[in-house]
Image 1 (cartoon, rainbow, N blue to C red):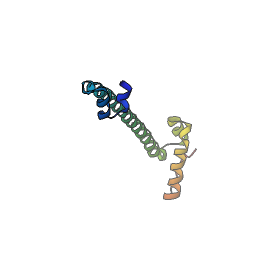
Image 2 (cartoon, rainbow, N blue to C red):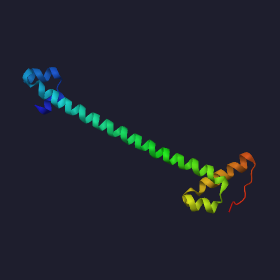
Image 3 (tube, one colour):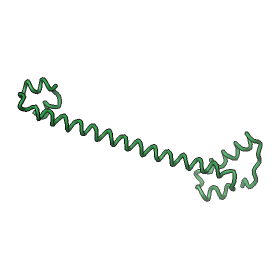
Image 4 (cartoon, rainbow, N blue to C red):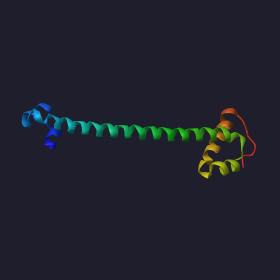
Length: 107
């Protein structure tokens, strides 16, 4: 009966099992709807967490780009790690190419 409630329409289920078993059909579909809602809310939470993480990464990138013109490469790498050295280099190249600025302390 439980499996039939999942696959049959309300009309077909009631026709097969009688109106007195309508509560079974409703219970099965209520559980199904709760499960769908639970998964949807979990998906929304996951998406929001990803957005928060992306925002943190973006904030860090902006901070690094703002700081790069003002500190040496050694200081930048010491603060943000060698993995972000390319950010310092990119900012310095952009400043040189677009603004014609040569900055000191480009060790």
